Image 1: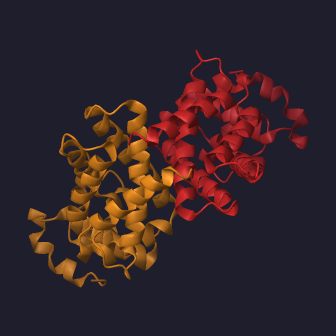
Image 2: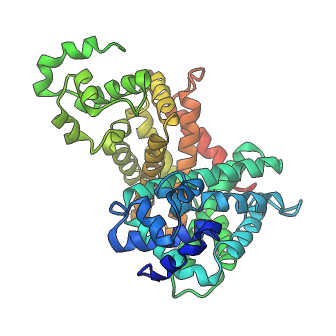
Length: 201
Length: 201
């Protein structure tokens, strides 16, 4: 990983485009690290991934979006809230969704990659803006999913904000490579801490 | 307001640039409404405001920023939290800051203008991104100000998220032109509702 040789060797397979979004993400992250987000073109990303520009734009509307996974996280989150046990409290429904996200999106072997991705985003204002907007989108999706469970409007909004905060803190803790806990475990513990902190506000 | 005639008549006074940020904001909002954010240039904004391009860039780093007031809100917020009574709870300190914001930034005669500004932002993804990033910045400033009051880290983060949510909901209610309550009054009531909702999460 790093010099693109391996990716270019994969070029003959490109017509099937296996795991295209993942390959584009890895290529983009490498290039953003090597030469900066501003100095990397979509063409360069597709070349390193051994894919075509049209494949890129079939998956992502623009260069920034390649780091933000095209809605996978929203799907996991909404599905996790929808399928939480009927008697679960609003925050327990969010915890159920964070379990699924831990399993599917943040397995332990993804920890180092996630830390690199976060560092690239933190270094660029345009990427920070996109991430901020994505977070608002995730919160809006949580609110809708909670309302579908019959949670009143304001409680849904408060739950979604607290859930997003717990998620963010758990993610900070998880991607710290000195930490060895599972994401889901960290998320549950953080949600409990966040809930307890509301009494001290 | 709307055809720019008045602004252009002010041109001879431009060397003193009275209220330049406000004049640029009004001009930008008019132009974004008339022809869209994408189709408006900084030059057109400065011409309508009767000011120069260099004045624009002395106040704002880019075209988007003209709608976001260059840090005024952060200053009011931080100052309000810093000067809240010593015995105030974290959320009471935020309420104290929202009082100041209501007085200085959201007087009643600003209601219609604020609604227009919100509509322009909602219509453009780039402006929504900038607004999302601004919100994160305000939350970070609140966290720092609360920590300076000795509030523990996690409680500061939870308070800032709840404060930001109450602020957002109060602002939605306030800019609804059928509403006649003061912003500060709405903000206090909303903070109480948000705090009560945390027990239902």
